[in-house]
Structure formats: structure tokens, C-alpha cells
Image 1 (spheres, rainbow, N blue to C red):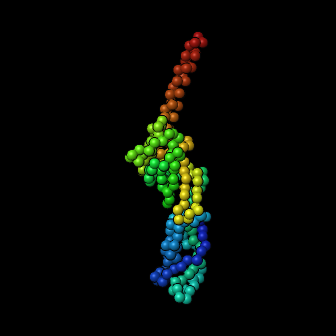
Image 2: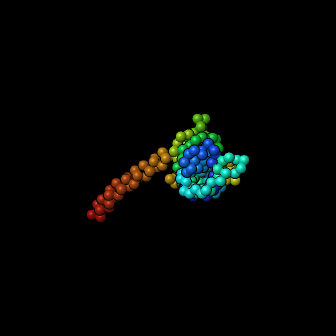
Image 3: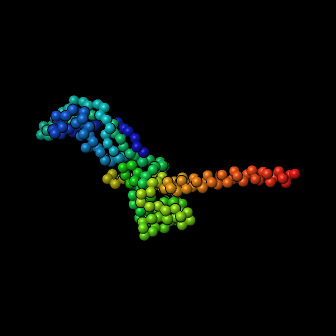
Amino acid sequence: MFYEAQVRSHVRVPPKFFGEDTSEAILKSLNSQYDGFISKDLGVIIGVTEVKEVKEGIIIPGDGAAYYETVFNILAFKPELQEVVLGKIADITDFGAFITIGPIDGMIHVSQSMDDFVSFGKSNVLTGKDTKHTLKVGDLCRARVIAVSFKDISNPRIGLTMRQHRLGALSWIDEDLKKEKKGTSEEKAEKPKAEKKEKKEKK
């Protein structure tokens, strides 16, 4: 999920920013340092949104840059277990699909791509045997997070499933909703007929 958090840290402001407003210079330096930064605790930092507090700066001899103790807000993305996310299929392989969720990609194993027997086609499309559902690059999908690992900070691993009810490509979900709506309408239409038949039999 996307969220905002407050962080306290020291930031290095290089001499090229000395002529600028201090807060603006600090914001630029923070974004340069934290944009795309990955942390086990914070997730993937998308950017610094606001500088809240700046203390007196110090210059370390031999460095030339100024250092400020700063409190700032960040916008980050960290997937949570069992969270339902919306993403776009970025790639299809014979072992599954890669889906872009926020700033990172997750993996949907072929066995978790749909509640069906799935085959991989030459045109890089996954197809369900019974449902005839297809999954291809560019499809918008709803998936549930079932595994999160930040062991390798440079390459976090996110596992997802689309086998459950109301998950999968949005086109599948729309199709299922239409079928359910049609089935409900037919059921309502049949009910009065059955009641009329029952009344006639009683007479």
C-alpha cells in the first residue's frame, strides 16, 4: 500500500545548492538521496513530499557540504500480506506473469494465475482450459499479495495470487459480474411463472 511517514535524519547539502533557499536545497538533496531507496522497514520510497523541520547546519572540514538534521515526510509503497492490489501485467513467461504494482514488479506463478488448468501459448499468453480466460501483457488485474521478502534489498520479491473470487484480469471480473447479473434476472423471471403454475394447480 501507499502511505506517508515522517523521518528524522541528517542530510548532506552540496555547495552547488548554497545560494538557494535552505528548505528547497534540502528538499532537492533529500529527493536525490531517497528517491527509489528501498528499506525493509519503509518499503520503496517514492519521494520526499515535505520538509517539516530544519536545525542549524554544520560544515565538516575537508568536505565543503553542509549537514542539517532534518524532519521530513516521505511517500512510500510497501505491500502487505493479504492486501489486494491493482496492477498491470508487464511480462508473461511459461512459469507465470510479472505484474507492476506501484513502483515495483510482483510475480504471479502460473499455478496462481487463475482457478483453472493453464497453458502457455507462443504469443506469450496464458489461457485457461475451461474458463477460456486469457492473460496477456498490458492487462489490468486485481491480485492478492501472498508473499513478501526484502532479504535482498536491491531486489524485493513479491508473490501474488489471482485464483480467488473477484481476482484476476478486470475483463474476467466484468464478465463474471454480467453472468451473475443475467442469472439473477432469469431466476427472478422464472419465480413468478412458478408461482402462477402453483396457483393453477391448486384451483
